[in-house]
Length: 114
Length: 111
Image (tube, rainbow over all chains, first blue to last red):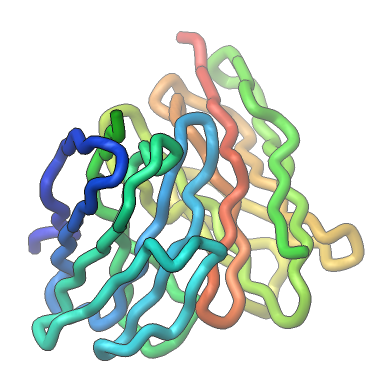
C-alpha cells in the first residue's frame, strides 16, 4: 500500500507570497494532521482534520489555514510568507476517529522563504 | 503549559551498550504517550505507545518504555543497541486533538 504522499517535495518562495502544500493520506485513513518542523526542533502541531472538519489547531497565526476534501486529501495554505516560515512541513494520517492515534507520516515538503 | 522535554540532544554509544533516553511531559488531563523514530533518509515512524494499562510497554526492534505517572516520565530503553539504531528519537504526548513533540534526541551507535 502507498504511504502518505506530499507534494511538492521542495519549494522556494519569496516573502509576502502564499503557498499551498498538498497531502494524500493512506487509503482508508480519514484523519490528516499537519506539522511544522524547524531544523533542530521536533514537529509542531498545526492542524488536525477528521471527516473534512477541523478538530484541532495549534498555536499558529491565522495566516495558516487548511482544508480536507471528500477523498480525505488535504491542503495547507500559508499566506503572507515570512522568513520564519521556512521549515519542513509534515503531513500525517491516521484511521480516526479515535484521537490521539498512531500517526503515519509523509516525507514532508521543504519550504524555503527568501 | 503543555510541553515535552527530552534531556539528551545527542547520545553516542558503542554497539551492545544499553540505552536510556529521558522524556518528561507536562500535559493537563488524560495524556497518551508515544516514541517515534526517524532513521536516516526515512519518515517518522511509531516505535511504541502508551494509552493505559501496564506502564511498561514494548515496541518494535527490542525497544521498551516505562510510564511513571508520579514523575511525569516516559523513558525509552533498549538493553543492547545496534549500529542500525542510529536515528533521531522523538517523544510525544497527545490528548484531545493535539500532539506535542519533544525536540528529539540524535543517537549515534558506533560499530
